[in-house]
Image (cartoon, rainbow, N blue to C red; front, side):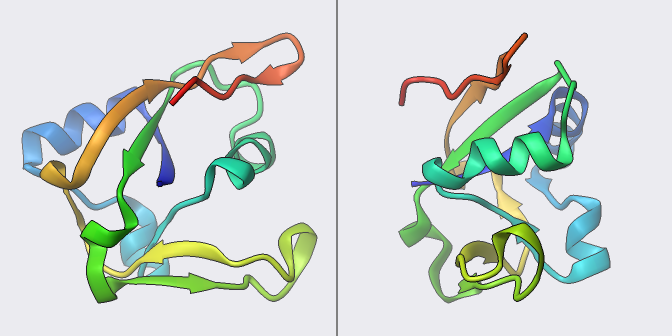
Length: 112
């Protein structure tokens, strides 16, 4: 399983559009995903304090060859491989949508 952090507003817009194509896809050429072991770190680094977030749960096998596991090469996650999807995400590829609750200690991973 791979996970993508998205705001409620972005997810609602994707449902209206019939696919999910965030700004990172145009800007960087891919959609950022994380494994369950990586996602809380990503949430804390890039979404600290946000209480409007969801997690999209996706089966990596459904993404085919457009999913690549890549090392960012620098920063706090250098040496780790993260899943990157090099195309829009089809709504049918999303297995589940989970709340990403924020507690006083930080984000809380849901039970999958």
